[in-house]
View 1 (cartoon, rainbow, N blue to C red):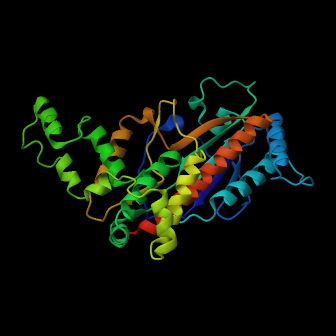
View 2 (cartoon, rainbow, N blue to C red):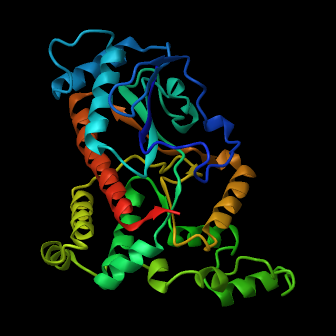
View 3 (cartoon, one colour):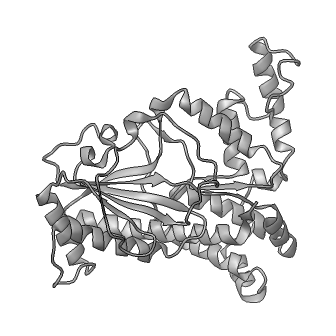
Length: 358
């Protein structure tokens, strides 16, 4: 059985966003044959009939132990788990504006649809599996709002961008001017990080100036952004942010959410990634351009084309993990993932403050 918690966060229209086709077939789940009613706002549950009753019963018991199911709840264990999980996730993330994702839960890797990510899994394992899948979202622009924030309170815009990138690394990666530059180093610059190094590399490959005329070069890319946007640092510490929160009402909400993000990260909030699985996610949880004239959409298109040529190494999952069914293992997962979902919600709040639709 695979439970699909679809489109948690912002609704997406068909003409929005940078989603492109990806032929990563062996990592994609098949369609679920049965859809059940919604549990909670924006939450869709789907059911695969290949049930592992013992595992679902144990998992339902875990949710009962943490009071996410009432003693009077009745129904199939799988349905009880769906209800408890859906309500819990929605409570953790709230109503997000700019980040969307799907969560899938299953009693086995095969039922999850991404079995190849767990080659050592066994039918005898006392664990359950879950994954977070990408969902289409729109491009946003940061220039106007971040520039205003930085003007009103020097260092706050840069600090906001720094913590945005840190928080997205713990939850769902955001495509920003800095992370798009990292993609350029990977797919365009053969690992080079500056213009001189890149030119030396290109010329060693026999490229001429004419050949490089339309290339995305480091200097050309960097020229579209202020330096602090590409190399954001935590200019303002916790004490400074606390002062801003209490004394500068125009930018106090930004300082407040940054303090929340710092605390949630210090507490260990994190969502599952793909560490050790030999695949990378081809999509991002948010797409944050500087403005409509920067080259980030071109970089992303080039990355998708690159991924399509090497699809075995890419997936549409942000992360996946196996979770123990015993009480202690479940409680550890619940605590860490709850903090991770709250961190994701805070990240969405920050994005709403520093970015807007283009």
